[in-house]
Amino acid sequence: MSSRARGTATSKQDETRPTRGGTMDYHIDEIKEAFKRLDRNKDGSLSFVELHDLLVRGRPDFTEKDLRILWRGMDKDNNNSVNFDEFVDWVYGKPLKKVKEKWQDTWYSYCGSNETMEKDEFLCMCRDVGWLEEHGFDMDAAGELFDKICKKEHMDIKQFNKVMSQMAKRKDQKKKELQREVSAAPGPSQYWPGE
Ligand SMILES: [Ca+2]
Ligand SMILES: [Ca+2]
Image (cartoon, rainbow, N blue to C red; front, side):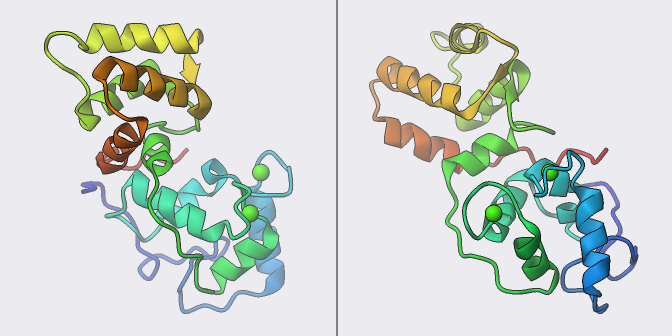
């Protein structure tokens, strides 16, 4: 649960940022402008990171994982970015695509303000998933596994797939089971604060 106070869609309208389901009707030019401003890297589409602050507005109880699932519902053509048409549909309250929760949602939810995972985020996830043991696969072992696979400070989702393969061997479990365990983890209880 978020303990931070946040404005809701109805209590605090900011005219420059469209909020879904509000009472205001937005003119297409306003939406265009908002889209342009949100598109910080100017690549013509919105990433999860670019949309994050807008998605959390009016949703104080949402977790990072909830946001991930909401985000995938907006991304109707599954290309991991929201283009202008998808954005317009969302602003006008068109039904979102139905998505099932996936282990990737949980994984991304532990990534903080980007889409790669640092070691402390990885350890936090291992703990929540229940992978850490007092003896054997402990914090140090998890850290070593991170270094071995990642070789840099950040891990991407492909590298995490390798981690799961190694974990599956180590624990003599099927990788599918490990993916289920990741899905079952709650994700960080609060979303990361906006910039
Ligand atoms: Ca962009
Ligand atoms: Ca898309």
